[in-house]
Length: 349
Image 1 (cartoon, rainbow, N blue to C red):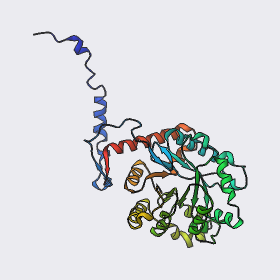
Image 2 (image 1 turned 90 degrees about the horizontal axis):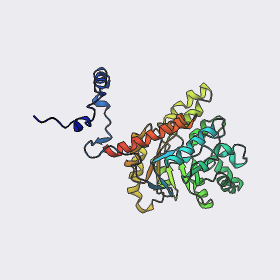
Image 3 (image 1 turned 135 degrees about the horizontal axis):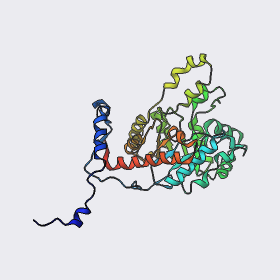
């Protein structure tokens, strides 16, 4: 019999050097890896035959808010004016620049009249061409209108090199906050005044309880840059403020903090309203946020929406942004890798 070609034999790959260890793990962990039928994620069809494993960077670039995004992620407004805010905001801005995301700052109220905490917010140079939006509450805007001081908005945006302004609408938070403001006018009236008198891109958001169909109907007909859901399911700032107050007030108002709408419900509202309003729709985009725990939640929401959308997270980023940048970088990279994997193998139902 002819001798085998020794050169070919020698170049055969190792059969499987980790096989024994891996199979032992399979035996030991099999019972812990059981998944009940009720635990299956019914939002997706799993299609394992139609794609190879994704390569890094396979999520396509796309336009959003007049900028190019490389991932459908938005850093939702969080913090400012505290000792840790500088580290947090700088880390988040750096991640936006590296991974091609957008960012909303926490409340910039302090910058309207002082530059004392400007260094906490001045992060635009770290972001490159990615969008940075400043953030003011509806109460502050109402006061600026009353004082005829809307010029301060543009001054603030120039200091920050910001691309636009987020208006947060938070009547329950203000009511339950011990130091809270009171609105004189409906927020919609204030928003319309800002649109008429301040020529900057505007995003309108809630602060953790979302918005019902009629509020969304009004906003969709305004020339906003986007609507940010800030739906129920994530940080609830009305509840947060109530927890700062007395036990008596918590007993009275505790149930009030539980009203609101989930991001999934708001997606349904928006899609219905697009059909109802037709060419009356003037707002071109959505940031789906509130209760987004992971990339699967975000992937589902942006694919269900019938407007261009990204998804926003706050606490998920915050957990990793308080220390060294590498922790945040690892987290964001994993989110994007998960999105690319979902794009390859999951179809939204």
